[in-house]
Length: 382
Image 1: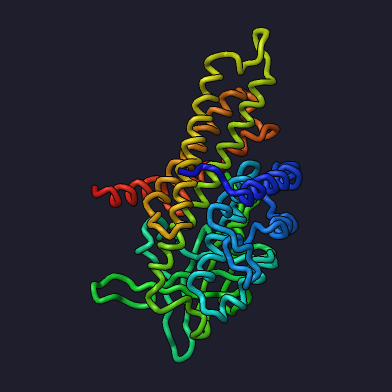
Image 2: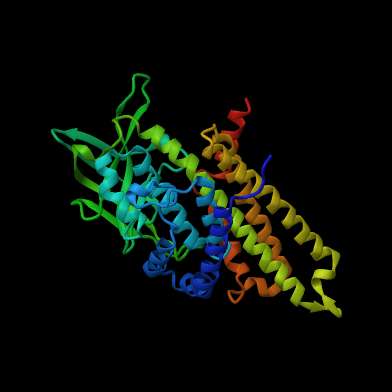
């Protein structure tokens, strides 16, 4: 078995970590306080190759393997969950569906701009009444002549209503299958299309400098060719997109856990009580030892899932496992990091407060922890 990363992957980790420490860490708290998305910072992240990482060079992508992409997300999340969310959603949910399912014309039209960071793209799946139960989607698309007419709404959509937003991939009901279940298809909807409205969502507990949107479609008319893939392919496209997206959420959990652990370790070494650093007290040292052990387990689980994907093996079960474990791990580590900080961990002057808030969405987004357990239980034959 080979556990060493390639030279290119090690260099990527080093460069992204250096960038995040210099460019993101100094302003992360300010952006969080102001609840402000930064197009300038997003463009800087694109400039170092963090958008379109797995896309071929033909479309201005970096043509890296999926593990390299995951390492990039992990290192950004080590410093700030909001910026990691922008990159993770920009790649897995924005670029991914167009790259894997789009026509050549669609790829050439959108991918180069998205890979260069000139724009961002959202993935419209969740609805006010359809979150984990995607089968309850109410958004519809009806073919009238040479146009699709789209009606409905979406909620909690990342990267869909900011200065860089170019458009969104929308899943809609396009008919009924023979077994009576809804038929789903996906459509590419550009900003500026009549009847399409995107509104930023505010007052979030976490990822406050990531852009989150509500989307509304009021008789939005789309050219027939704006369908993604074939009519009825939407459900399959959604599942494949979520499998890859779960790996990026896991990377955010792993990176966030690493960041919270490092903050706790640093504080424990510096904080002196009863004449010695609190890291010397067994009660504190054991918290850090447990965190270091779990982070190592999480990294191996996530990297194996990526290895399976890169080697064209089945990885859906492992992706669900990695998403579940890494997201919940960040919660455990952030909780103990706050405990180590004591009262100081409860104020915004210390970054563990932000890690503590940011972890929660990881247990909800792209399939809740409960849904991941359902997925895993089915794979193991329950």
